[in-house]
Length: 72
Image (cartoon, rainbow, N blue to C red; front, side):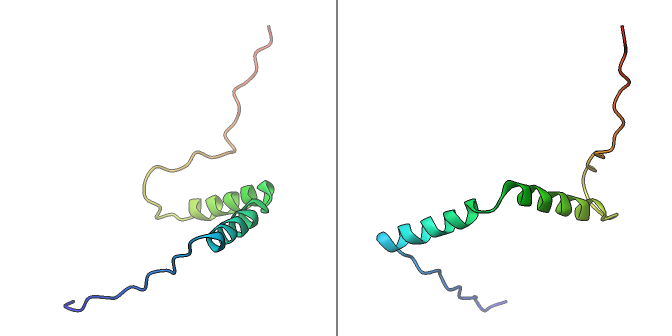
């Protein structure tokens, strides 16, 4: 515990190269379709909800019955 860990800092880029890297990263992020993101989020939630030892409040089920409709 007496040793201090030396962390390598990431390379800092400035100027046009920084803009190109940022632009490429944003283009890659925005190229992912929303349907794919939603599908991944649902799969992750399903996996997390399956954990019986999950702490905190439990998520409500999506299969809750709808209240009956009253006809007047």
